[in-house]
Length: 576
Picture 1: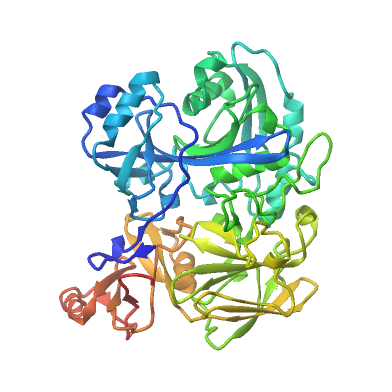
Picture 2: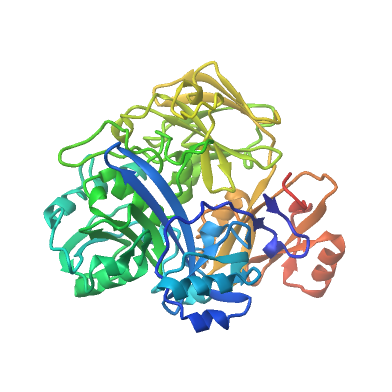
């Protein structure tokens, strides 16, 4: 649930996330005495790692984890963020310099764990995470943003490393390089196809096998793996082959098991995957872990399973029948919400009831996700918000190209939690989000629980479906945050149209969040009115509460003007 605080617009969004409990530990370089002297706050770069373990015998993924860390001076601290108050979406803080507030005396258990085997089995319980300062922007030449815009058209580097006590080479460099060809169904072609040409990894290189300085049992201790040190050592032995400025990310191939999982993440300012032998022949696994490095989480049905959705490359990508010897499992498209999060959908391909009045019902065309919309009033994704703030997405899928193995040509809906995790809307809740219940076809109508959102499937076309959407208008409305690269100021603006006009007119502004900063209401429901004033000198907006503060600012500072004539939005204490 997002909570709006009245004290500050800039801190209006507080996000509570539920994160899967840790299954694997990163190597911890923190000195025990450093932790024992630590006060209740710690600052450093926020990192994330996603793990996926595959049961080769039964052909399915068996378990996963999502782990967050704070990295300071090359030392890692494992975080338990289950109950953390977050100043922005947690996803958007990865790769940034953050400050965490540590709850109670959890560091005592943490240090005792490190004393045992130098690898933490515990984590620091965190009550709050917020941006520490703007150092991450000053370091932008060496530290990539978690969001992918700046690296959409950069190659990857594949580094093959073997442990000092094992000389086997599961695959050769030619085998790996061939997986990245620009033809169906290989990875350069895949990323271009599913992102409408917006992601281009051409020029990807493969080097190795390099010998690591230590044996496997140094890096892998039971289910704890020194992933950071593995990455450092593998890059180091690659020497001049590795240059983080050239590549969008690095795939690390190893010649022995890593305690079970393949992993993808963002640590020390880099996108990295860790690929054990079981994963190296599977195109879908490599694509999946690369997706994690861009911040994509798993999607699923709204059940206990994590990998059950056949609609998403970031979920069940192991039952798609497509394969090409000697490679396995051709990945399907990612869901529309993940394309939206990656920023590969043109604004003209995105429809939302925060920008269009659907209060009396409106007919729109949802284009099949596999191709660009070409018709008028045709979109790749419908983002629909209910009056309670619940977010739904609508997409259409067809059995073509990489989606040849999806269950059906149908409309698919997802319920989006915290603007981050997507669950297939499957009314029969039978554990199968690919069955007929989850496939919305002509004559069927989806209605949400409180009855203010309806999606009726009217007709099928050669490129998708005509649907009728009924939903409340502009409740909530997205507020976007833009960054002025020249002045360091932040500008908050209302809706997609205003955001894009500013970006087009003023080149000093950039938009890297990928998602709204928060949501507000245009409806005067007795909440506090927020007025927007425009600074004619700095080209920024100032938001202030109530008419008294608004008029005082206008009287005292001549650079501000008020032309809206009405409140920009109304501040709620909650979204519900």
